Image (tube, rainbow, N blue to C red):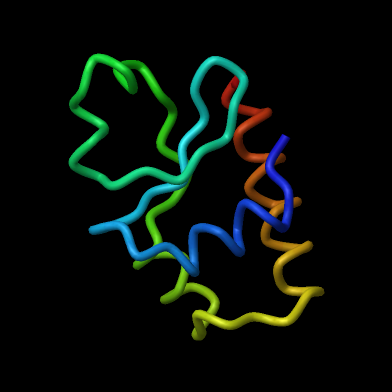
Length: 82
């Protein structure tokens, strides 16, 4: 579900306070302000760009870091029943 490309898109997003979400089985990067809209109501917020960059210590992680991060976030989302 969550792939390295999603992590890369989140870190590279120009959206205001970009957030990785899961909604209706789809992973997306959206501005935090969009989360209150009808379209994203009920979406599972996975991680914000700011929080992820802080955890990784960079906005340009290696391919391995992207893969490991995607795997960890995917496992967490699966455990939450997403």
